[in-house]
Image (cartoon, rainbow, N blue to C red; front, side):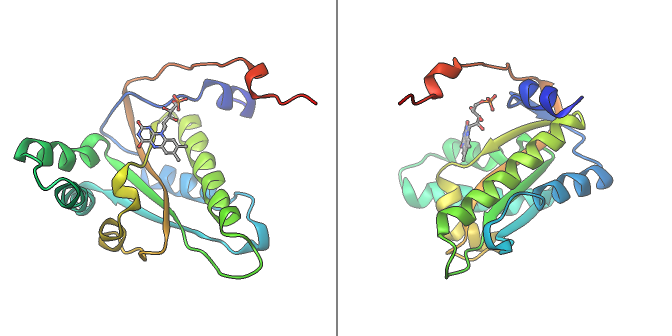
Length: 182
Ligand SMILES: Cc1cc2nc3c(=O)[nH]c(=O)nc-3n(C[C@H](O)[C@H](O)[C@H](O)COP(=O)(O)O)c2cc1C
């Protein structure tokens, strides 16, 4: 698959299963993440890899976030939240750690987002299914600290990776909608 085919055939998977990326493939995916453009070479990316039982840390923190936000949440709702990180064998939480100074914060977050897309495309080229998720949990300090991040870090993506069970559909939009003409 060449780079054009890779970009044009990319879609979020609907359902993922075991196995996740092999050690070697995970290494290739993470290395793609740190090959993104990065203003000032600040290397703002921090990646937390969760596999197996390590996903429970995220699961518990997500359920706790929901409980605090919605004290009336039922046990079933909390269980559904806790089940979310189990939707994929491997999760890469990609966060931006900001260096205060000359380079605007948004550019450092953009560098991490570019790294996430690099990882998405690399995983896709290797034949894995991918989902880019965030949700309330991604903005919660408790979740960040449970993952070894700092409260001031920005979680840019929770990248779910695994074997495709149900593939997503490629949806194309008219290019015209994206163009601003003068
Ligand atoms: C920063 C960011 C956060 C996202 N968070 C979520 C999310 O929490 N839940 C979700 O269903 N989709 C989320 N998405 C969107 C999906 O990952 C997906 O890209 C979108 O639904 C379009 O589908 P496609 O990837 O197949 O083109 C997010 C995308 C981005 C860029």
